[in-house]
Image 1: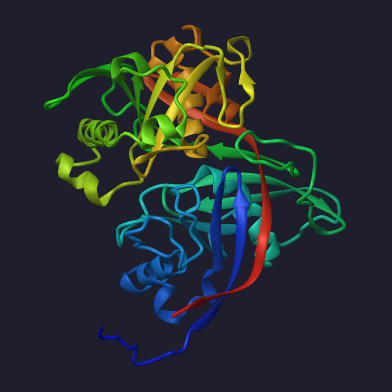
Image 2: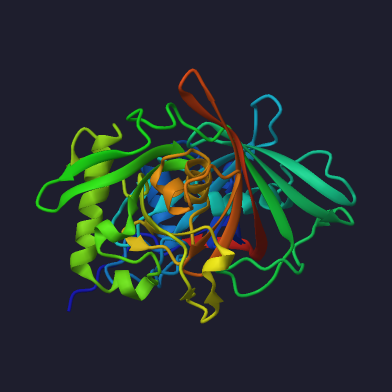
Length: 389
């Protein structure tokens, strides 16, 4: 056996926070705490974050890093003082591939958005934090150039982290954080100008789809067209390689139809966007926790893919897309929810249900979303240094 020795046996220590935000977890850095070459976009920054998270890992576990072997926990965030007018903090999000040396910078993480406000306060990036009450942290989301407002509860001048707010997909309660996604549409809300399209996927078939840019570019399909019910749990999807390949092929060709890719091959380097989701009318089913979800308590069922796997709950950005689509009559989301435009929608996902609201208008045949609001929670898990070879 030949042993390979690095020239240097030292590790570098970088200040970091490890937070749960919504149903995701991530490693949070202050920009100025990073090594100088990693304070700008490029290979050094990517390599650093890959190593922090423990990717690429052919075993899929990220044992030698802070990732936990799922898309929901393979994430990093870089925060900095914002120079944008009327904003407190700049938020840059990295979705780290588990088994490939790839970081996708093309979108936002809606779940971690709930933790950004709290993290920014912990890192001293927010001025005029009240002694008690709610601190509205104004966030500039750098990846997509959008504003997010996180309403962080404050007690005795510090972030209130504990509380009695339960979020389906999170085992323990915490303090509620309301998150507003302001003007979350990127370009045209419906990139094809249609609320429903038919598009062809070679060797698979033709599908009805709603393509939408709100929160994150998303492709919505009918569950029945995929041979699915909309009540699937992770084991039903993620243990089926043939189905996963089919869903990825649909996502890739859908990205072309949306104008995101010039060819379906481009999807191999852009795993975070677009998202693929399927919808169905409400039905009684059992969540991953074993709890019953009643059809009478939800408006529709939604399941969504994230980084090639079924998400265990729902991405916050995809929830923005769901809310926007539900508010527009004739989309597949709206039809599954009963066909009437909804300013609020409660949808079932693998871990339970989520309520999300949207304010949507149409001017001269152009749809606009003023804001989407949802409740999340966040909590520090670790504060200290992450060590990187």
